Amino acid sequence: MKKLLFSLSVLFLTCSFVSGPSATQVSLATAELKTMPPGGAYAMFAGKFGGEVSKKEIASHQKLTVEGCARGSRIFTFTLDITKNGKTSSLNTESDELTKEMLTKLNALSTGDTFIFRKMKAYLPNGKDVVDVQGRKFTVA
Image (cartoon, rainbow, N blue to C red):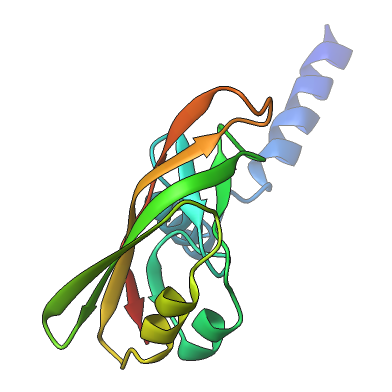
C-alpha cells in the first residue's frame, strides 16, 4: 500500500509541472483554423486561400490548385472577378491556368484592389467525377 501511495504521489508531482500550450500557440492555431474553409474542396492561388497577396506573388503564379477533401483534383473551368478602382470585370476560362488577359489584368492591380475566383469546377483525381470548388477574395497588398 505504501508503494502505491508513493507512486501516485510521484506521478501527481511529475504531472503538475507540465505546462500547457501558451496563449501565443493557442491564438496562432485559432487564426490558422479561421483561414481554412469549413470543408470540401477549395482553390489555392499563390499558395493561399484568399487574403492578402503581393504583386510579386501574383506575377509568379499562373495556375489554380485544389486542396481540401479533393486534393489532387484539377480545375477545368472558373470565372475570375477583378475589382479595380471600384469597377468589376469578369473573365472566364476552361482550364486551371489563367489566360494572358487574366494575367495582364492581375498584374495591373494596385494595392487595395481585389479579385476572386468563382464558379470553379474540378475533376476529381479519378478524372471522371466533378466537384464544386470554393474560392475566397484576395486583396492586393
